[in-house]
Image 1: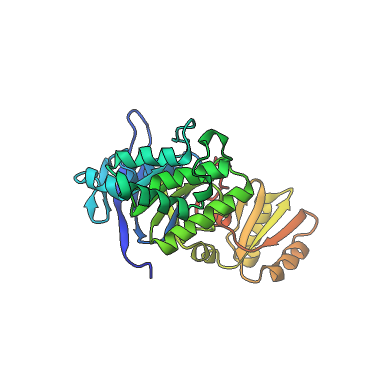
Image 2: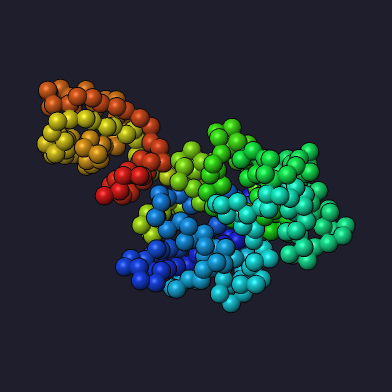
Length: 312
């Protein structure tokens, strides 16, 4: 059961010097022990700032963050022992082997001798790299290099593994492989995984998600819970007169439609029943109609009024 919060974020705000707007504004959420928690948002949404706070690279300007019961500001040194961080850009020495990189990382945590070797064997095993231990990092594929980064972040047995855009630069097969290993970590070691992402299919693999936009938490829950908030099917209508169509739908069917990228979008249970009614009641102006089940992008549109990448 994933019921015990290991991370608490309480009314946290953060503004960079000289920035006219806050990077984070009054964000509050909990992360449970042993879950894969995703922070989903477009570039500039604040997710990297939130990751910087959780990795202790930044300190909150307002509010408080607790990790495993420790206060982020007062107990920074204690928290750093409990977390492993894998940044978006590689931090491995490419001229060393995987095993040599792990040894070097272990030394930073004062691991040595038999204990260090046991840790190396363990992280190589859980990341599926035992047979590649003597491979030079510069010779690795993108997927293997990312797994080596994760092995490095696990060498000191952290309670929490923090990942910044873990699938960056990986092909689809390597991405699937990476997430399979992350699930194994969460299930077998009860390691809590916190990952930022801007990829919808990657977000679907998380236990729970925080959707962030313009520094604000706009939705929180499991992928299924979030999509369930849509309240039915998603209907998209292309028309030469989107404003007129939107007004007509509101008057005729009492539905609150949105205009997104010059198309009319509405959410409705059993949407297939209303499409013929709209087309027949508003003839000659609708060029196409699509019906789909809700996606995480639909949740984002529902909350913000615009698409994930097309902010205006």
